[in-house]
Image (cartoon, rainbow, N blue to C red):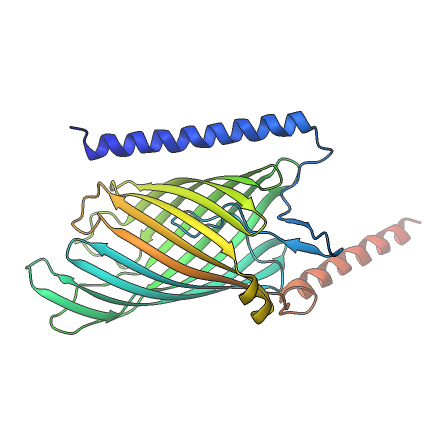
Length: 334
């Protein structure tokens, strides 16, 4: 009989093999076609217009592994999702609203906030049934795209996420303690064939801020890999796998497609997606979870912020001052 650990090991080997195969195929195709320049620009020319038409990301990062992308300076990205999770007797439903804003401040970056609302039913450690509502951690994030090489298709981002836990309303017994977290993720992405294939690797450190002696580990390390394929300009499919040092492993599969009707109605690039995931091999009773997630990603075409970003004017002023100082230095020499 094959153990769960052995199954996850085989799964990891299969994912890594697929990643390696995709990379080799992409490199071979790039060498065969001998393009003048390899690029990671995720837009393709619209045959009916000179305006660049936005295309879907091969790896949109809607599972447990993020991508390196950030909104363009001055642009907003809105994510609405509804997740259904089940683990043994526990069942939960979570609605999340997330808003990210793109900035240009020395590097392309984003600031964002996500607010969830969860209802949950299940049994506590004493076997008593419970029902709760509210809760979920409000997450504020800063993400910086600190490296982006269009020629090689390699990009890297890092950030910091602060997760502020909210009080959970338990309707029939006293709840457990809640904890705040700081998460520091690093993501590296390789785009192949103008972003038609994307390979992603990530590692993150999760620190529990207000952990007491009842918490075994205040720092948790999570690492993961992902791969995505852009089927056409409007749809993509991706898979990712993550594992923590506590032994909890996750696998997610996501399908994303652009909605032309919603895009026209909202004057935006709007994508709908469905993601299914499963965790296993964890040390906690509720670690073996199954999740189904439905969501919308809305990218309004309108720019919010003069000259493409709140901090753009600061950077522009600093650049102008540096240029003026350089000119003054040249005149002094003469």
